[in-house]
Length: 264
Image 1 (cartoon, rainbow, N blue to C red):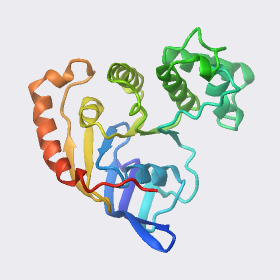
Image 2: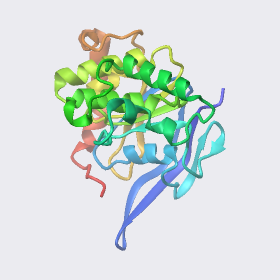
Image 3: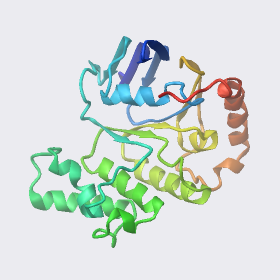
Image 4: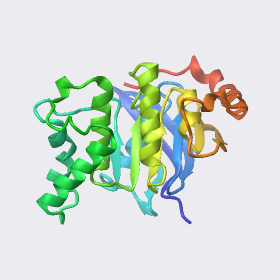
């Protein structure tokens, strides 16, 4: 089968004034349909740029990005994008925030009742049943992330792009949300591309982990994570195989960490 996402020799340069910033250089990567791919690397190595290219929010300078075999030349409505900030609208309730994509034209054929039922189903799926009428300022950080995830899933995209969604959370809450994410993803058939700085997080959830080099970002290595599913993120790190994956990936990652810079 052809990959759902295909980066073919992709390079991307940004400009700060007259100064070029080489974000990606000659990246070739295929993402298979239904897989969970994690991308790690130093700050500024182009991880988020890969997601932006997939979402159609920018175009590659060189090379080609394809989705289901077609070049991505405009906003890709087949993907949902979960950013670092939840971006919930403060004047709307959880219910109204989650239903926003359906109001903006996603799944136009759905009746009003079907839309309400779908919103309720995804709110329940992420564990927010009973909080439908709460506003964002009445929710904890973890609950806001759950609402953001439900909003991204409600129009049932083929692919979910996640850019360090749990990076700002405490360790315990991060584990809980990783577990919720896996429970939602496993068996769904959806493709998930997950950007993170946390190597332990990447190994815990992913089918494959891509290690990016320092800027300009290139692929330093790709590791298959052959740990059984379903996975328990609370205990998986204590398995001997986990330590082997960590050591292998850390060797590839550590040499570039001090060179990474934030991309502005």
